[in-house]
Every structure is written in structure tokens, then in C-alpha cells.
Image (cartoon, rainbow, N blue to C red; front, side, top):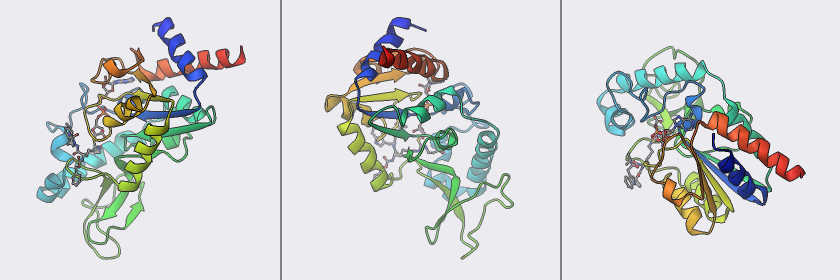
Length: 250
Ligand code: BV8
């Protein structure tokens, strides 16, 4: 861990009033949730881009549901890690703090974060393919695959944004508005290749915000980052938080 960079990040955050954090699969890696592009990202032989599409669901809803059931099982068995917990604490540390996630695992809420902007949906929510009604269902395993709507009998699908599908307009609007108005944006555990999520930090930087990146690997965002912290977020974020509190007490 590079102490100078931890210090630099804490210094940037010390004077910040409006802070945004954008997270990806990497923040849940230390909890045991597989990332998409990491070594454990594959399910059987499929890539996410193959299964997380309306075409895949149309072609074989049972296969797609088996994949989500496997992920629901993995997520149900794990707990938030110190990275999630620091971000939950930061919602009361700054005058305004907006937590935007690409993750569908719900671990931010489980760590105590309220009002999380879930760009790509939530794995514990199901949607009726006929009526569009969304229900929360945490049963694992689901009694029947594919699950059916109790009201009309139509197929239920995960309430998740698949590749080629638009994000919810209000949710995306909130994310861009917060990014345009922030002093600092943190990008944590994301490979920054999936859009429109990956353009949020660029939007913030273009509006004058400082960018702090947390990732063991460099990403397309590293060049735009004022501070790029190399390491696992479950270790880096508590270290930054500790320095920040010391600086604020000083
Ligand atoms: C749309 C839900 C249009 C599913 C997901 C512009 C340019 C190029 C392509 C496009 C573009 N605009 C649109 C596209 C197409 C596409 C896209 O971006 N494709 C990519 C692959 C190039 N985007 C879309 O299709 C979007 N929709 O554009 O609709 C439209 C508009 C109007 C009308 C009709 C259509 C929808 C995108 C959302 C898809 N759904 N998730 C599910 O989860 O089942 S995306 C999914 O993949 C995740 O949610 C996430 O967003 C992404 C994975 O990225 P990461 O989270 O970053 O994870 P990854 O594994 O890649 O990286 C992990 C990182 O963590 C690594 O860097 C690693 O080093 C790091 N790490 C590892 N361990 C740790 C760590 N970091 C910290 N600590 C650790 N311990």
C-alpha cells in the first residue's frame, strides 16, 4: 500500500463537500463474489455478455435462470467487507454523498448504505415479462425455474439491465446529475469498460471534479485519475478513511 497516495487521497477528500462513489464488481471480490472479467468471472464456459442479454433469455430462459440462481446462491452466502462498510459510513461524513453501483448483489445496502443508485438492477428483484411488475424475492433456491408470475402466469425475469437494454431513465438521470455536481468522484473496483456507467467519472472530471481510483489494476480511467490507488478496496478504503479522520481532527 502506497502511504503517500493514501495521504493524497485523504487530502483530496478532506475539503470535499459533494462526493460520489461509483463501484463495480471489484468491491465485492473480497466478500467472495466473482467479478466479471477476473479469473473467476466465467460461469461454466459462458461470458456475462453472452448470458446477460434479452436474446439469451429468449433463447433459453432456464439456462439464464440457472446462472442467476448460481449467483443468488453465491451472494446469499457472503457478507459485506470493510470496503462496503467505509462507504456506508461516508454517507454521513460529507455534506452530500451519492453511492452509485453497477453491482446487482445488494451488498452496499446490507452494509448499511441507504438510497444506493443501482444502475443495473438488483439480483433479489424479479419482473413479470408481461405486466412489468417488480417484486422482491429472496427465496434460494427458487421453488421453480423459470419462475412464473403468480398473477398472470407469464415468465418472470431478473429485474436487471442486460446488455443492449437501456438503463432506467430516472436512475441514470440521478447518476449523471450527481456526477456533474460533485467535487470528488471515487471509482472503486470497476474495469470501466461498460457504458454508460464508465462515462460517469469522465463527466465528473469534465465538470471539474477530482477523480480517485481504487483498483489493483490500471484501467482506461487511470489517466484521468488525480490519485490512482493500487490495491484491494477492502484494505485501501479503511486506510484512506483512517487518514481522513485524523486530518479532520488535526
Ligand atoms: C445500452 C447487469 C443502449 C447484468 C450489466 C459505448 C461504447 C462501447 C459499448 C457500448 C457503448 N454504449 C453501449 C455499449 C454497449 C454495452 C457496453 O458497454 N458493452 C461493453 C462490454 C463494451 N452497454 C450496454 O449494453 C448498456 N445498455 O447501452 O443500451 C440502448 C439505449 C436505448 C435503447 C436501447 C438500448 C447496458 C449495460 C449494462 C449491462 N448489465 N450488469 C448482470 O450483472 O447480470 S454490466 C456488468 O458488467 C456489471 O454490472 C458491470 O457494469 C460490468 C462489469 O464491470 P465491472 O463491474 O467493472 O467488473 P469487471 O469484472 O469488469 O472488473 C472488475 C474490476 O475490479 C477489475 O478492474 C479488477 O482489477 C478490479 N478488482 C478486482 N479485485 C478487486 C478489484 N478492485 C478493488 N478491490 C478488489 N479486491
